[in-house]
Length: 142
Length: 82
Image (cartoon, rainbow over all chains, first blue to last red):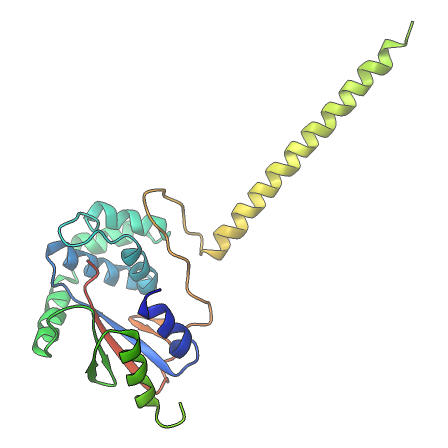
């Protein structure tokens, strides 16, 4: 089981913490395209559903798992407005935003992903480290 | 001789039940499909795509933020989807 489902159950579902995801693109052109696609899904209120389908269909660096054709298939599978999605992705309207976010992350010291901050402080990515940082943020007795 | 018309009527009676059972089965499959589609937000099935299970309905999702906006702790994750 990954870190996120456990954090979700322990801290997000209980209202103790919220998770903000910032997509960045370190691993090449298709990383950027996938991040743009997530923004296009966000226009339809389906950012997290698209996030989940991307992770469920990852192919690793160098694969074509996030080609335009595959991203469009994900949109179909999630029953998005596929014409709007294709138009959004084709326009490249989020390309500069993803590039700016990636640059901003690098300036903040992010040089690998996933990189996690809790209340602004970078923490290691293991479950125990994230859990400890959240409990520290919640204060005594949490 | 035995009355043949009775035998014929019994065959027709049996067929009627077979058709009825088939129709009921078909309706049950359709109903199940509609229920499952509703639970997954009407998402469609493509065998080449893995569609993950939806998150619990009680978990707030707003833009890039998962969880209650008023939660006291903020986790920020930088992620490369690939």
